[in-house]
Length: 213
Picture 1 (cartoon, helix red, strand yellow):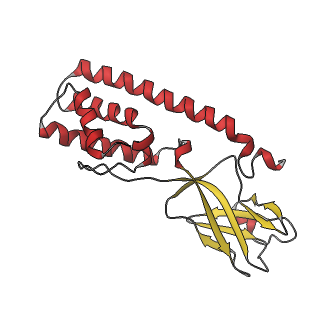
Picture 2: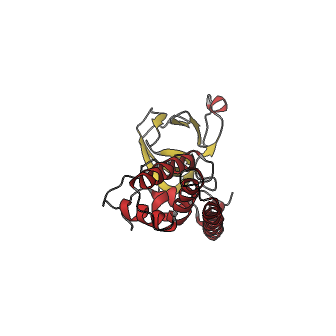
Picture 3: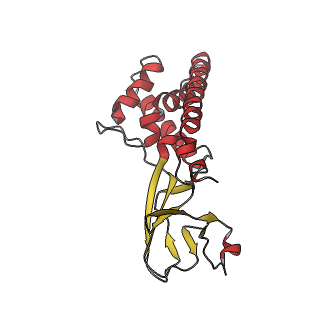
């Protein structure tokens, strides 16, 4: 795994081995700006996926989502185990959730909370897959990068940021275009890998096709 400084060094090298402290500072700014844009976009690659487990006590129907929750994994559903059998919850809108009774289990996500019905009569441990929201910033130091985007998409991020530095800060238009072209290739590679992994694993996502739905 690269350190923050090594990632910045890579960008400086691709900018023509520049040594200016101003260019280096600009590069850090552009990388962090790009990371913020990535955290807000709808595309969520596999490396942002995580599992959350929530314990609902008897009579409890709402729990807060994880602090880093961004989106549900579209091919999965929350589940719990009852008498040794896995039970899946079906999704409803929050408005439709109210008043649900019977043997089927439902859930709704409203704001930063997950709601379940019917009201559990005993403790119920619900697990589900979700995509994390990683907004960790890049700082010019020797600490290893932990932002999941930087760890898994370093080339795309570095080239995208370096392209903007070349275009707006160092007035190197030809270099900016070359960096942007390479960034698009790195982005495409990531998308292709994501799709390959998604289709490879789709039948095995908890609550996905593997539950017979």
